[in-house]
Image 1 (tube, rainbow, N blue to C red):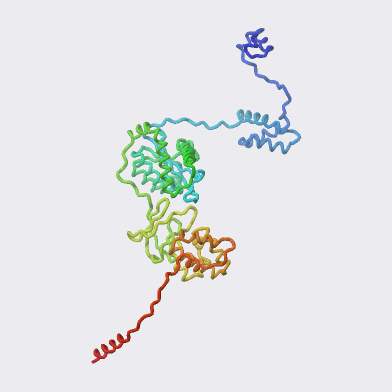
Image 2 (image 1 turned 180 degrees about the vertical axis):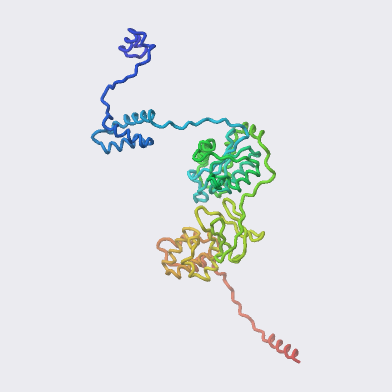
Length: 472
């Protein structure tokens, strides 16, 4: 009856009833096997491999041994082998790193870091947007803010930090950052990474003490490292609710990002208020978020800014210009006149606007074949296909000249007016064409009414009379 009520086997219950002292004694360790060790043949070979490479996974090692010793092991022994490896690592493997929880104080530390946002699959007007997020977090309240950027540069750091500070309205005591080259690229005489002078001037303006974590110790920036993943998961959820991931322009995506962050910071307002109460006020001025570079326009009608060539109108050849380099674009000035605003490329060494050089190329069409920046003169894949088609239909020289005339027409009318019709003319089975065909379709000549002039010879006689009078 005792066994029935306790759900115990009758023989086991009888043992405890016959000897009640067994209940208070610990169960003796078993030092014998109830069956033959199924891994006895392969374990002596597995253990040295584990000692040499403790990071080996049990499945990979078992599959390797199964291939070497098919007669001594079976696939059904995988689970047994995994338990043996787990027990071996527990007894002989290295102990995991201990993470010590930290106590954060209000208004003390602000952490900054970058994270890639490629997995968000954001697109702008149908084109994928490869970008990063520069995020700032207050570990005490978990308040966060992030801005879109292109790289881990000082410009993105300056823009991201200032956006967060002016959004917050106050300044903490310490700015903590990893050993990014944006902040610690300067190498001292002792081989240590010191803060860059530009970064020091930034933190001195706001009265913040800079602090870095140790190299290869991201756990010291654990709060923001964790928030990087949380932020991207939150953005993915809002994108799923939105139903699509394409935005009209980058400003619309920035607005969406700000809206998500504002909602995330809402429940943290109470702790944020506690931080703001002990933080310092912002300085009255905000630093400019660009670098100025003086440059001369060379004979190629280009300037070089931060190792990237940018084209400018040819009339400025030989003149000195001033470039304001923002994180995502470059503004070019001649004196106080802004002559261009050019997007900064990612992974490219030249940005050439065909409108700046097309007139010169039409005067020297032979230069196009080996032009150093020729690939930059294809505004889209449609134009690349048009070039290949023109060369195929008319030959190398005449085809290149026709393509230059196509660029000239595009400069006059805009790519949006031409690209649709151009795509139709590149369809399969279409007959050879020239740029004049497009011009005639898009710019038909206005009808001219011819009027036969009436000739009055008396005007000529009057001139002869006036001349005779003048001579007399």
